[in-house]
Image (cartoon, rainbow, N blue to C red; front, top):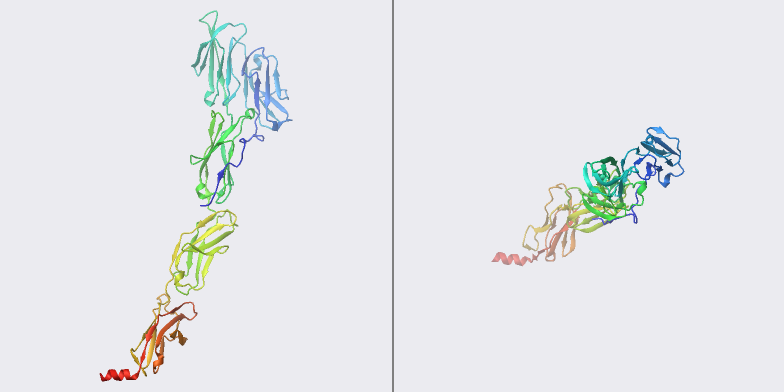
Length: 484
């Protein structure tokens, strides 16, 4: 397993996109009511972030451009004709959303902000025309009572969310007649405090060994830039980084098991507003395939030049990756890491048999992979030789013939072998194609411990027999035997 750490890459407050290049202005009202009585004053502001200072401003009402080029538009005395849809833009931004102003000439209006943000406390006021006496006020949402009749004419909605949006109504009872009442309705619009988060991955696609950074991208409203956000990351529904102020999650030297469906969750410090991103599937791709050991020739016979090759397939995304290879037999290293993907044995012997494996490492990263073990059994080219005597016992003057017996592998039936003979460890017949050693007239001094040695003509395989004791007896031994 490659060692890796998963950690936040950035520290401090969560950084979110300010949306400078794509920011849309916001039209705000002061006082912050979407509905006012005639005769009041009102100031509209085309709000933009500091990234768009020194801009020209353009104002519109009901599809008509107004002759106003300032950031603010002031109405000193409202009239019913000021009712309409207002929006603005600058010389470098898109147009704002529409903000609707209603100027009312009536006994009663329900005043709500033109819009609110998630987690805002929203003040509603059931306003009366000056001189209209009322004693109690009731509030409704979607025709359901949310506050019964009370003397208080204002209602505060604490920490609104998207479900708080809807149609609100207030009703006032007259002080002069309990049967007389007036009502008005207004719609509360609730905007996103921050956009739905999105997980982005760099680099993408991801290959084993890459240092991966996942970023949780969201954008706070320009009017709520002071809001503190916290963020968490998940893989396949399980935490990989708990809530913190960091908007990034990093994996050093990614492994295949880091693949999965990643998402991030953003919430305010009070946890009132929470939003989860869509899952992004991240598939870590092999830098190179699992290695496999191949052996040539196959099967391997004693004396063969044996070559083991460590075969891999390199990712097409990393064609220039430098790899190093090492080889092992029975778990012990037989060739250190090098650029060669082959390990060779010049003349394989039986003791070279074993379980061979290879390891591949990328020189530019920590990615390592070990192949499965491959059992390589070196087969005998010929059996261990043994010496036999055609005649035994031997008496002085007998013709002594020793034979070096072997069994040749059926895989190499035409192999040329050479034979040599020894007495008491000293060579009595050099290597030749003859598997026999003969003495025309054996003498007592020919007694001794005989062995033979067999080799291939190239000397790649060589084996010596065990010794056998040959005793040449004197002639009187045979005469004594015959007399008996």
